[in-house]
Amino acid sequence: MRGLLTMTILNHAVRKVPVLAMPLLMIALLQINSFADQNDKGASAFKGNCASCHGDDGAGTALGKAMQAPDLRSEDVQKQPDAELNKAISEGKNNMPAFKSTLSAEQIQALVKHVRSLGKTKTSQK
Ligand code: HEC
Figure 1 (spheres, rainbow, N blue to C red):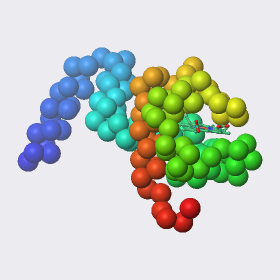
Figure 2: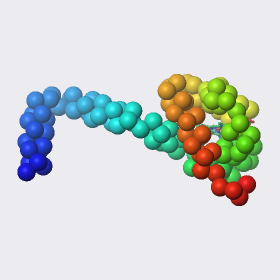
Figure 3: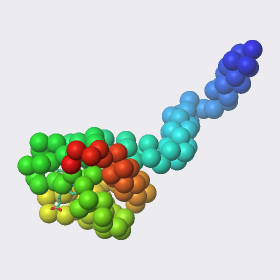
């Protein structure tokens, strides 16, 4: 019954919203979703922009290691304050590219959080 009601309301809404506004509405809904989960936002930005060098888990891919990317879970990286990591991501550092022109300040902040969460998943093997 509830599903039917939702469908009816949705149908009604869809008919009222001009066709062109629909994609905008969808984008707005997606935005709300990602605000609700900062961590998820960091994770998806990481996958799209960073994993090619750092790997999904931060350990570093062959490419990243060839460029001397550190294991993001390591003490050397994790001991640095948020501001320092934020700067490395924004401005770049040696072989690490700068991201301030491709990512928003908010996204970079979410990425710092994500790097922290990678640090917490580190196992005892290294
Ligand atoms: C083209 C490969 C490449 C990509 C893409 C890349 N990095 Fe890096 N990253 C590096 C390298 C190389 C270093 C080592 C820099 C150094 O300290 O010399 C590094 C270092 C870092 C560090 C440690 C900085 C420090 O001060 O020790 C962090 C944090 C980091 N990257 C995060 C990211 C994030 C987040 C992204 C995505 C937005 C990203 N990286 C994308 C190659 C990359």
